[in-house]
Image (cartoon, rainbow, N blue to C red; front, top):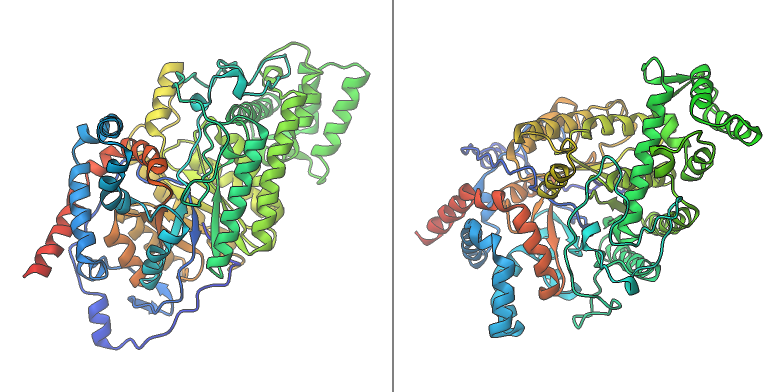
Length: 606
């Protein structure tokens, strides 16, 4: 997730005598933690670690051959009280009924004992195990501790959005009209054929966002009310970018596009993007993946009017699509050159109303899209100016086509010289590797730096339930083995691309996983392709889990990171509960990690 053009860490070279090598490469029995596909989330901004002295096994300069996961060495950096807390918290989290009913238990405790009592019980235990603190002042010691061990910090505002979480009160929602007079602000918007409705969840009404008593603002994006609130969220993200710049010479910030606009608008944008792709398939008569001029004209006459205005639209579109001088148009050109405004002009010429016309954005929607793009553009511009990389988080699959569209639009502009904008790919989705190939092809054709973060995914339960309710095929891989394969194939694809092999650009990849086997595969790919540790390959795990992975990587000279949620306790707890419930299988399966912690505690006692 980090860019090649940020100045690389200057590694302090240390003597590597045989004794030092024996310590570093001490053989231990490897432990393979295979989390479920929802094992890592994506909401964060990051601070890069300070320079560190590497100690790793290598036979060719700084190109790694392997990384040894020495638990004793990794845990030696963690205080005993933190290990005790980790064992206790992970043990409690292994009880699925407790995790499943945690929200009800917290609500009951708050009513009976009061919020202050609950905070005093939760903060020193569960909260501080999984979170860095409540405000900017509290998180600094954790960041500094991690940096001293060669580990960067991924800071998260702990907020996310979904359509069913938008308040239903008309007083809180502006009227947004679609092309056919539909109201996007209504409780039940029109559902595209490939989407499914999600049963609304009743939430308390929210007023304006205020500064918390802790002095730190939070971009809670699921209670969309007005465009002013989106502007407010954008200002919070801007502060985050500036905070990264002020705390590190090189750093990263993350944004969620559902905080910058109405989530329903993002879903409509996604539907429009899908229909633009569908239209390409209808024009591609021989299904060879390319459209000739003759095929385009024939397809246009088949679906669109041939009056004076229709012929003008045809001529303008042909000129736009063939501007590069190519005889054929492929999907990359098609997607990059057909804008929402062009789609609206085409829709006006439809011979018969159909999915394409129904999915077309209306004038008000296009206006709101422009405002959302303006917010994202301003953040990208600020990040580029301050030398901060900007991460665009992946979200639910029914938002993702719009998120990809906006992200690639920003990458085309801001990744020309530096890898400033990073996209996130969820490997539990069946389409992921084909999408990565398309985006790599587009970056090479348009001469910008491809940059990404790989995750397995965080919305598996919701995605499958939504697909089942609607009756369309689940976008999620059928088995966890398929997800593992997709993740590993994606790593190989990204780190083996031509521009990396030619040293024209760095890998620009963040590998966010708790799966040790995937990490070892990544290190093996680095060795095979002669990729140095300072060539843009990064690793990340959740704070409070996988310490033997993160500390082993950091102490071995790899660029390792911890994902740190933070914010006021009562503001962050609902988020943590949702994440814990989504990752309950992973928490319940952390038996080996608890055993490793237990062995380290016993070793210290004797």
